[in-house]
Length: 372
Picture 1 (cartoon, rainbow, N blue to C red):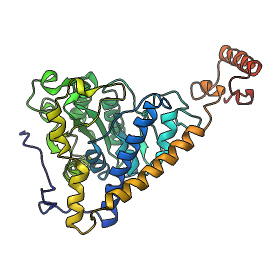
Picture 2 (cartoon, one colour):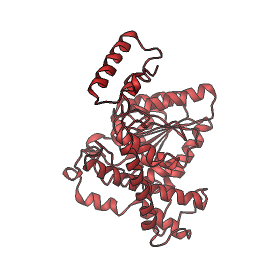
Picture 3 (cartoon, rainbow, N blue to C red):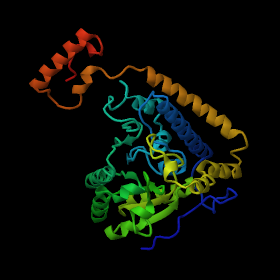
Picture 4 (cartoon, rainbow, N blue to C red):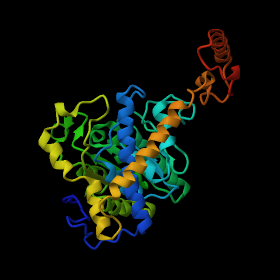
């Protein structure tokens, strides 16, 4: 297997190398708006964290094209096992900013009932989005397990898992690829190679000539793609998904991209990323690139970005206000979704907690009723 230079589609003038993405004008504009919606959500989340209204966020600036391009290749009944830098995949498939903001605030409408950190989304509708987890690489063998289940049940589904370049140094990456290769499981591995695992550069992390080539040891074909080229990402992920769905087994995709912000809102990238590297990648902005393609198709003109981004900022701002004003989870939720039948000792402890909260008046008791 030879891992070649990153595949590209969108040319400097907005042409597409003759590639037909098979998307309608409406779908192409949906891709464009989704990237701007990611940018609006990202910007708002960082401001919320900096003002102390939420505790944490993960910058997505610069990664939008890879996220949305990959999302276009999936059906609603496929499953996504994401890493935390993946706002665009959720938004593309109809998860709303309000849905995501509920998790950012950890309120009563958060699917995890406030048990997860911000940015650790989980959804079952309109697409299967398995909960993000903080430990690096855990989602990779989970995706392989789900794909193996699809295979055994003869279900026409594919699992896609995403991870950063740092995730390739995890045990989950190697065990996941090994099992997927053996089983020829219908799973697609998508590596967001943004050059740094927090502050650890690729040069300090691996001696391999690429991340894509790491699949060779496990019998998993690897390909490289320009991660800032939405259509190129769509092309390679569509090919990998189609192959997996037809029984051809897994593919490892390395998408070369770059996060223009820190690893998280707890990080200062100026301490380890050279200024010239940031400037180089800023010139490769995936939204700028897609605008040139849309303009070539007669679907974009000067001023469109300002109008769409303003609309997106308003939508995300409204979502933040709704989530911030939503009450925190009730005290009774600490017992939810744990046991099919609540053990007696927890029932006693719960009653004591409810009684104490009712006397103090400083927490919602949820009426003092157990949920199970």
